[in-house]
Length: 533
Ligand SMILES: [Zn+2]
Image (cartoon, rainbow, N blue to C red):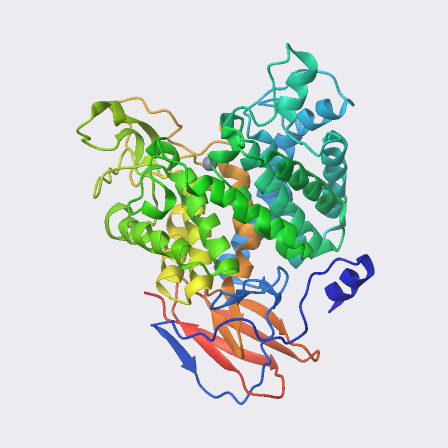
C-alpha cells in the first residue's frame, strides 16, 4: 500500500486495481499438497496483479519474506556482512581492474583509461541489486547511503543520448574513434543494460526512489532507438542476453507498456536469427530449439528471458521450445549437483556432415551424457542462469519440477561458488578436485577473491540477497511455499488484511517444518506446501 501511494504521487502507473483477478488458477503442482482448511482467508492479492497475466503463480515483492534462523539466515547474513562489503572494496579499488572508476572516468570526474572486461559495468549493477535486496529485509543506513552514492556515479556517466557503457564512452573520447555504440556484440552492451534495468527496478521497489529508474529508462529509450530495421548485430544477437529480463523488470516497475513492447521487439529480432553458431544459440531459429547447445550462460539467460516474456504474453510458441530444451538438460546434460555447462571447450554441431558448419563452443553444454567430473566447467553464472530460468518456468506453469530443479542447483552448484567466509569465489564448480591435475585448466581450482572475469561473485551476492523472495509465491486465494528455511513472511491483501506466517525449521538438515500463523485474514485461504523431490 505504501508503494502504491508513492506511485500515485509520481504519476507512474504501476499497480492494477486492487484485488483484480488476473492469474490463472493453480492447477499444476503435481506434488503440491493443498493444505488443509486452516480457516484462514486470504484474498491472495498478488504483489503486482496487473503483471504476469499468464503466470500460474506470482512472486511477492522483496521484503515480504525474511530469513530468521538456520541455513538461509546464515547465508544471508554472510552475504550482508562479508560478501557485499568485500565486493564493494574490489569494485571501488583499482587494484585488480576498473569498475566504479570506469564510471568516474566516463563522467569526466577522474582521469585514466578504460580498464577491465567489457562487462564490468554489469558487475557493478549486480552488486547494486544485491545491496538493495539486502536493504529490503534489513535496513542499514551506511549501505543505503553507499547505494545512493554509486547511483549518482552511474547517473553522471550516462551520455545525453541515454547511452551508457563506460568502455565505449571512454574509448570514443580518448581514442581513434573506432569505439561505436552497438557495433560489436562482444562489448556486452545489452548484458550490462539488462542488469542496469533489473537493479533499477529493484531499487525503485525497495526504496521508492526513481533515481536509477530514470537512468534505466533513458538507457532503454536509447536501445529503443537503436532497434530500427535492421538493428546492428549487437542487438540482433547479443551475448548473455540479460536485457529481456531487464526490460520486463523495467516494465513491471513502471507500468510503461513501452518497455514490454521493446522486450517483445528485441526478442522477435533475436528469435529469427540463424546462420550463427551454437555458442550463442543462433544457428537455429529459437522456435526450433530442442537441445541445449553452446555457452551455458548465454543459453540460460536467453531461455530465462523467453520464459519471463511468456509470463506477459502467454505465447505458446515461446513455451514449447523452452520445455523441449529444459527436458534435454534435465534428462541428459545436468549434473547431480544441478550444475550445467559441462565443457570448457568443444565444437558444435557435433559430427556435422558439412565440417564448415562446425564452430567452437566454450563454457558450453556438451553432448548428451558428456558430464566430466574433474573438468566440469559449471560456471557459477550458468548455474544461476539455470535457477533464474527455473524460477520463471515455475511461475509460468505451477509445475513443481521447476522448483525441485531450482532447489537442487541453489544448494549444490550455486552456493558452492562461495567460500564459507563469504569472500572467495569459484568461477567453475567441478564435482571433484585433485592435486595435481595432469593438465592445466583456465580457471583457478581453489576459491579466490578476484577472477579476471568477475561476473560470478556479484551474481552470487544478488542471488543470496533475493533468495527470500523464492520462498513463496501466490495465486488467487493460494499461497505456495517453495523454498524452505526459517522465515517470517507477510502476505498483504487488498483490504489491508495480512497473513503473517512464521516458519521454523532446520531444513535442509531436517525435513521437519513448523508453520505458525501469527496473523490471519478473515476469509479462507489455501496453503500449498512443496514436497521436495
Ligand atoms: Zn560468471
